[in-house]
Length: 265
Image (cartoon, rainbow, N blue to C red):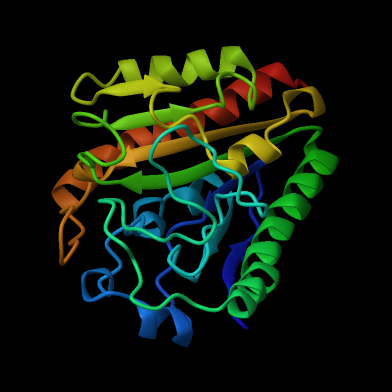
């Protein structure tokens, strides 16, 4: 497979990961999807566009090209569940609503190929870029960017807060950094937020975040109602996105400011 990801190297010690932004399908996945899934409803829609200010910040960016319906890059390669209760795995079998995703699933051989040719390169890119950043700056920051419908009864009760920060219950980044990010969210009273609520950080945050080795990782699960229409045709809403980008930029700027203070050179 070619073009399994896009990567752009930045100039500051921050890598933004977008593992669920991909829209490409393999022939085996595309032919096996149920009709309701062909519009790719569980995609983290428009995340690269929403973070288009990242170039201005100087961040590195890695984004998936293939859909999570092919393979979920935010799950461990051994497919061990990350959350108790309803969740999705390395090879999703249901939509977020609990409806079976396929009328015919790809073969085990196909899925083994997806692991080797899509999952492995994405994670290798993250690993190599974080190592480069830490070598150059003495530390590295990882921001795992996600979004989801604000109301998915099969996965969580009620309405999701707008900004859902995850640090694997404090294990993936310095606790002071997490507090400062919470403070940024609290400063924008039109939005709701939570730290380590329903979404505590997936495999990428949990695996790569290692404060003892000066790698700090945070996941943001953003309610899609904050920037787009949550149902087909999943239109981007500039009127909603613009103020949400102000918050996102403030969060990433605070992330960088904390690190500069914590790691003076």
